[in-house]
Length: 159
Image 1 (tube, one colour):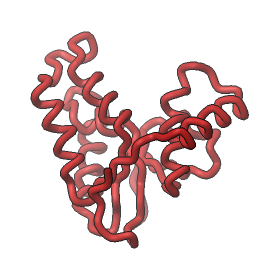
Image 2: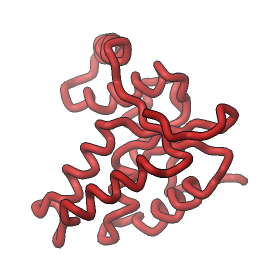
Image 3: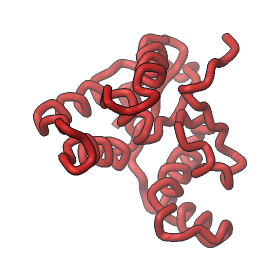
Image 4: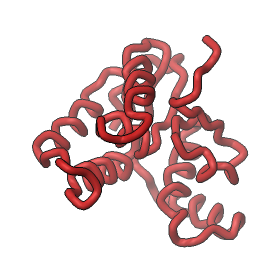
C-alpha cells in the first residue's frame, strides 16, 4: 500500500486534523496548515505517511453538515482521499495485529481513556513502521509517546 519513492526520504506521519484544517477554509489556521502541507507534498526529500483510518476520519468529518456549513460533498471528499493515495510522496500504512497490540500496550502503560484510542493506534502504527515524526496540530494528544516527534504546521520552523 505504498506509493512512496526512494527509501532515503524522511518519513513523516500526518494526523487527521492536519488534513481537515488544510481542506476546510472556514477553520482557523486553514491558511497556515494548507501552505505547510502543500510545501511538504512538493518536497522530494519527504514522504508523508497516512493510514486508512486517517483518510476515513478525514472523509467522515469534512462531509458532516453538523460540523461545517457547507460540508464537502462526498464525491469531493473521495477525490481528495484518492489524490493523497496517488501522490508520489505519500505512503499509506495499514495497521496490523502488531500495531494493535502495541496500541493496547500504550493505552495500558499510559492509562489512556477511550477517546485516545484512535490517536494511540496512529502512533503505534507509525512507530511499528519506523516513522518517528508526526505532523499534527494537537501535539498534546501524542505527548506520552516519547519516540514520536511532533511537528506543528502552524508554527514557523527553521529551514
